[in-house]
Image (cartoon, rainbow, N blue to C red):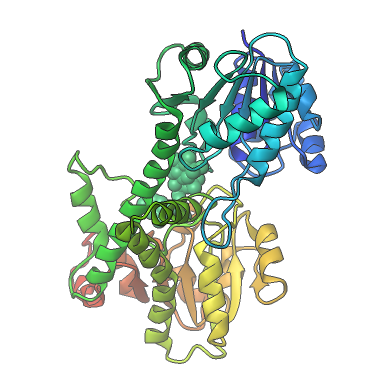
Length: 456
Ligand code: UGA
């Protein structure tokens, strides 16, 4: 069984490390953030991810996982090294490769001291050409060795989603192996065949294609969301139209599939906005204007504005109005606030003079550092709703789905609901309060009012 080292203890690195270690591989994870390393050593995850803490404790207890600061030591004590460091956006949308380059330098330094074959695998999301033209040359320069001869090199994109990272690591739809040379590809394929007991399709290709698979996958998923949000925006302007019914029927065509067709306040997170921007920037630099992808971003930026427009439509001026925000994280089951649509919605509402009270089951601490005293945070949905002039559902946490219209009626000053994630049944809600939603033609609500029992 191979010994593994992982450089970078973020979502991808830690979830991957924990899964490898619990399958019996001796795994060492290293990170430059001392605080993260200390937490992991104690069996505590530095971030929230369902099922991660239990599996992390188990992995540490078994002795199969250790966390260290010393990257060189991690590499020397392993046969395969995965690079899972972050690749943030620069101001122009292109990718900042600083952490990838630093990791490659340190891994190269370690390889100089190491005898025997070692495989380096780039798992971070990097633009096509990076593994071959940037990582390879840094590794060769710092190790004094040759890729393909003295050490192996692969690009292996990850497709895990926050909130279901463990499931996605253990049961991916496919594994993509971008190989610098045949031996590298063979070694990584053998490793994954063993890890997945041969049950997951493995696609081998060159590193640039593997790098592009990741961008193309995220860009297509983001495109599906902006597509359905465009349809939602049309639906809102036509009486008797409901985007959820349209999306359901469109998604039943197996050529389309129903996933990522949920209209709402738009996509956020550390991946889609960054990766689509990076692809746009890369494409422009290559001399092709990717107008489809530019529109994907434009539609996405419009969705938070639409929420505020809907509030204004109902309340007139928002000055002095109290808006209750249900949900802050960029999606449920995570405390991640990166590029969360809630941030843009709240900034726009504050600009209009509204006062905000927000509730999120777990992202409140992270949100506090963003809003820095400018908004109030409630300890529960009910506290959040008290005396509000309108309520916006921004993240579809399951605990919000069980709230009945009577709760809103009881606690709000004006029972106006703006459903930004389409979690409520329009006929049930519009019977008792003013129900407005992304992708719902408003006259339809009234019509549904007179057709009791009509389901969304
Ligand atoms: C995404 C991809 O789904 C992963 O495959 C990929 O590995 C990851 O990025 C990455 O590049 O590392 P993630 O950012 O965790 O994963 O979140 P998603 O579940 O994809 O959701 C992204 C955003 O789209 C969220 O804000 C979500 O609310 C929004 N969304 C999703 C919609 O608005 N509508 C939908 O129908 C689906």
